[in-house]
Length: 197
Image 1 (cartoon, rainbow, N blue to C red):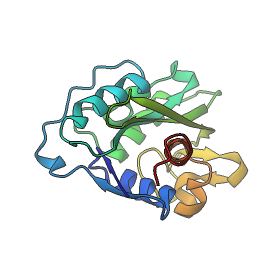
Image 2 (spheres, rainbow, N blue to C red):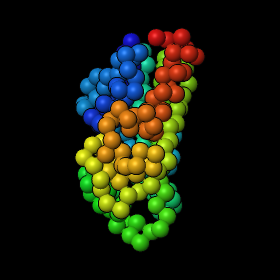
Image 3 (cartoon, one colour):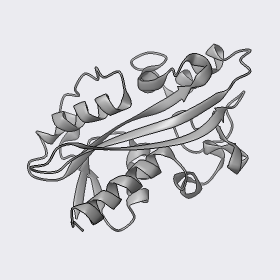
Image 4 (cartoon, rainbow, N blue to C red):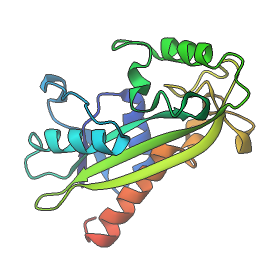
């Protein structure tokens, strides 16, 4: 069965599909590139995910679909960049630019604790929007490490792996990642509570 998602981020789409396995076929919302993106005015990941889900549901017809908002929270920065993770260094910022700014802001910081957060908002015809949150705790490395992943993965050090998310295979990252955990909760709901397969 097809489950549409409102993302044009290739890295996220790859992780959604990998986490879903063969149970669901996850596809980008048809003609997503032609749909004007909504303004993300929420102050939490939940608010932005729900805002996007409700907006894009209007283009999904009666098909089930979901939207996601995610980012990184750094304790020494009071939870920043948070919902501004993707545009931390500016509205058109690249991943390297965001990573560079994060390291600049953390210069001299002893506390480097951080967490990745992902919130998925699911829309099913005739039902209220449902949210699924996934988190993973880690630390910010002192310099980028690894060539895999995307976003802040080269800086996100996960102690049980002994490396950053960019240093481990994608399949290994997904077993503990914020996005993997959120998808797992959503799929458990879809297959268990709704009877959909």
